[in-house]
Length: 155
Image 1 (cartoon, rainbow, N blue to C red):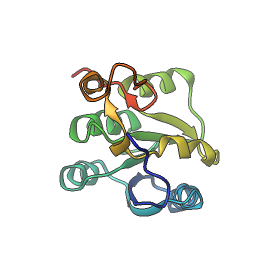
Image 2: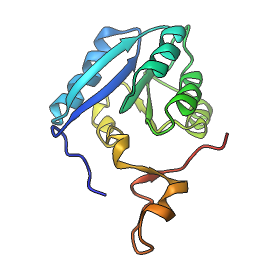
Image 3: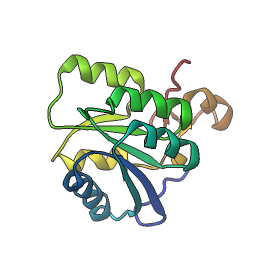
């Protein structure tokens, strides 16, 4: 399956962060890589759930440590509402056990704020990936699908 090149389509990004500056820095890193963006920034859990029901996203960026919106809750909610949309957690600092829990819950990556270069590999649109359970049906046996598929979370 061909990859979407940066700039070839609009990347729809939902940003869950209390800091407009951090949201803009993440957006700037994606734009600098050549992506055209449509972004929306939210701060509350109710707004996130409603938004995931009404809009489709290519990428969800979620700040770790929001008082009213735990990152793990966002990862789990996104897994239910938009299972093929990658969630990247942005943190100023994070304990190893919290990082492990977020990754087990289904986060695509956990990135330290300011290390925006790490955001680019995680931003590859979900439309270029297939869930692991569909790989065997969608690709030939000689195709290595592990680099373009992410595992499906058990429900």
